[in-house]
Length: 397
Figure 1 (tube, one colour):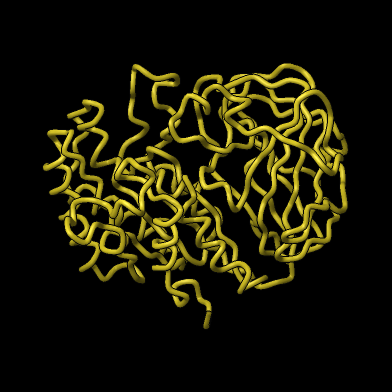
Figure 2: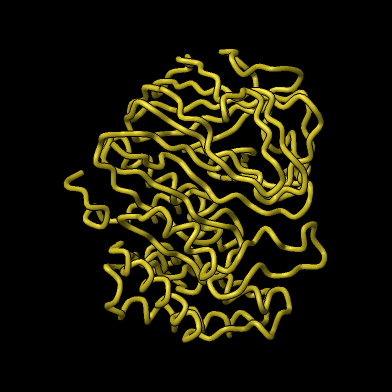
């Protein structure tokens, strides 16, 4: 028996209040591929500047394609139902006796009574492997049928963004105590991983066919770079802090601590674009810089016997920006190295799969959300289909 991570995302440091909540119930549904008899939740308030009080936390589950929630159980910490997460804290709940099967969805409901400013959350855009709804005006943690509002209805920060995320505050991980031999696969990257169109498509392809064999963990952070910390942007709330620590720094906590069997790495587009895009010319990188950073990550994974698969950087060309030619040259040189190198256990040539067949510098218009950079549902499926079963240690499909 061992604890395995059924769901986890990176908490985002907004470094600003994205919205306030009071007398509100947050309910989140999470797909799960692990059977077990105990669970625990990781509560997180790591980047907030004030305490977060969860007056009540309830966990239940529902069968796939079923609306009925079963087995409502109060979650406690040190025996108390009212859970206070101090500024900068993360900790696990008490162990919960909870029978769960692969394919069942976790349903976690949290009630916040007093007005609280929210400054850190986990987020998704695809919102198919997990999603959150909010119910104003009371404690509905044990209510079956609810009509919930979206994240953009609650948080002005989300509403102001062109691309609406779906978020959850207060937790960042669900663990299951299981006797199954579960492979752990981490997807590490930037917004293309974080937005989850690729991640969710992979879950939809794999979980139903391989119950109790594999679990996926998302370690994407939008705007993240391999070599440099969050790009400073004076004109936006939080000054760009939500782009996160450099990938090469956060790798130990976000990836290595999970002791993953397999890691997929897709990062580098922001290392190339951000210095030009946001006028940080002292941070312009070469393909060699990025290659050396990737070699460091690969060496760290091989030192703990994890298999690592590297993705090529997809097209991002936009003729509106005069610097694109320089950035494109770096991308092409880096991708050439990815295809030729022999130090990883394999590659996913996302660039080749998703680019326009008539112009290799652009994404296929059917595969992005409208910005020529981020994959949409169809693009995510194209990417997920490149992941070979042998990479995952699975047989047949």
